[in-house]
Length: 299
Image (cartoon, rainbow, N blue to C red; front, side, top):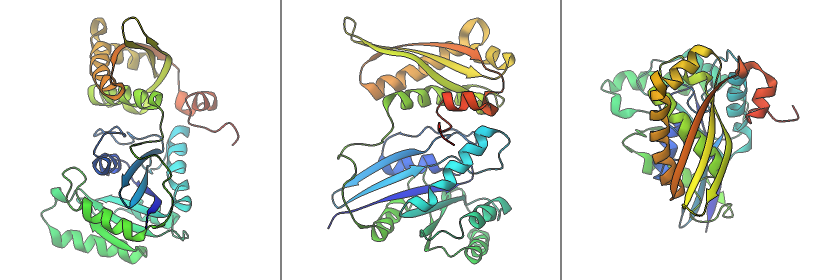
């Protein structure tokens, strides 16, 4: 019997949802950083095994939004709960009970979709008694089908979790071809790889206001090279100065690191040229949110 199903991963920013997705797939399809709200889009990761296909949906962190982009991100994450077969609600093992987590549970309490409580970053915990006490509060607040303590970073108990997810899945078809890891196009993954390097290299004022826009991408047969021209969109001139760096040093470093990952993704030589452009307050402007793919054409 072959099983299949859709599993959404939800929770606050920076609880390790993307790290978990990359762990189960054994390959990076979602960018990661120590900055909250690294994930902005719904990212599908596909794990196909002999008797099952797991379709995971990595979601943006649910948070108290201060921009229209933030509102979209939280809304997109919550919208997945009622359209999947299983929800993984992820929290940090080292946190005390958080009212914001309880608020998320309150928002999904009417769902009929089964929910697993996933306690991530178990490798950081020494006080197990305190952790168990915190979990009792969450269990009292929501009827979870099961609770799992894992470390997505080092892999602790991840295989056991996959076994229990398998038990929850029903008989179904293979939705994606064997070998497919994501339903996202290469252009999306390239933009994300560039953004990841910016998150890693720049100061805290940059990450939430940066967007990558691919102007042109084409194959040059004579040099067997993929040429990519991309714009780094920011909101202020001061941010543009940081992205470019002294005599272009930061932009060059971003490009060098991103090119290496893009070459690994495409399996070919890459010529990558980056430009930086200011679009004031783009995260609150409907035109730009739609242009950059964050808002549907019909609300």
